[in-house]
Image 1: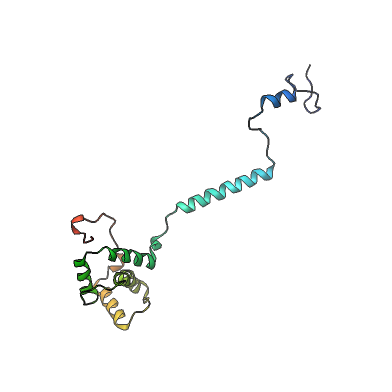
Image 2: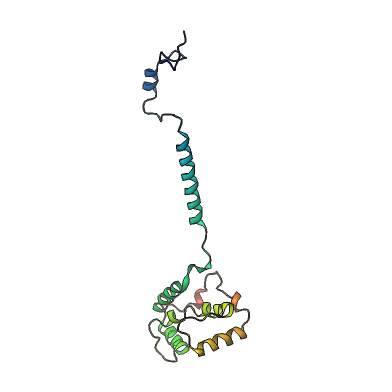
Length: 162
């Protein structure tokens, strides 16, 4: 004889509610979620997926910024051999001793020159002589805006680091 489940008299398959609870103990209970819970989970899943994709999206070439270039220049200057320091001191300062932060001071020069050509901007602290030099350089090298580093490993025989 079949009994109605809604009436609480038993189950249609002949089993009882209490025997199902005992058999399903420790298992994940299956239940239907209210519509609002389904919507909330869908929105949360989409939000997390969007955030994940955003975090994996590469940032444009401005990732280094001026401070990044200067920090790398500081680290590079600390690793130069004495001969390389003397050579750079002659080129940058006209002396035999490379001043602290000398490389950091010129680390953004290529980007500043490029920005002068593209946008007419002037780096902070530039004198009229600096502007004239930048304009001369950009006139002598009209393809300067397309120049940038090559992503290849440096040759070990050309490194001057200690």
